[in-house]
Image (tube, rainbow over the protein chains, first blue to last red):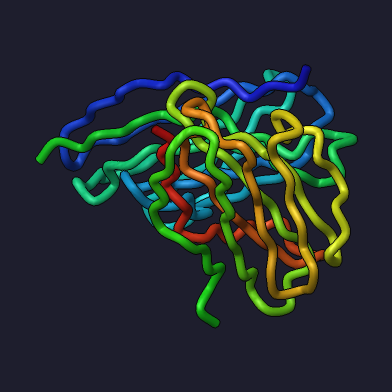
Length: 112
Length: 113
């Protein structure tokens, strides 16, 4: 069974620090990886996508992908209290007709 | 565009009652998804449609659940009869055929007493 694993947390970091969120997945040939942010009581929203090994930066967010290790991470620099949310890792597994499989999410709290 | 629209936002019902959740996808999106989210199981895909046709319903938990998409702008998820273990947030989402970015509705919080 194809799975996406995340540390459920909660993860607490002080304001201004770097938050590091990690995700592993079970299928070596997967090609598409996504990070969604979900505020409490709200719906998930896409914040990053990554398809190639290495880093992809977007403002304070950096996604890192290592396909050999089946590992994708999200770094949030200069964390703000407004970043406090649950972060969901999602993977499109090979043979899944491009459908997303979500991890259970990591709850992040940024302390002022 | 108003985004994906779901109704109702909250539904409280008693065990055994029929529940119908509604979704209007973003205009022009030809994929529609129904997800269920609980603390225990996270976000689970129940069923998805492509051009109004159900493609994969393997995530539907049992025969009590059914979903329809009579046209490109409307879908329903029905639970009959409802049970307390169906209590969850149900999300509808849509996307185009060429972009993997998924847009979620605001969800329906279902409580079955």
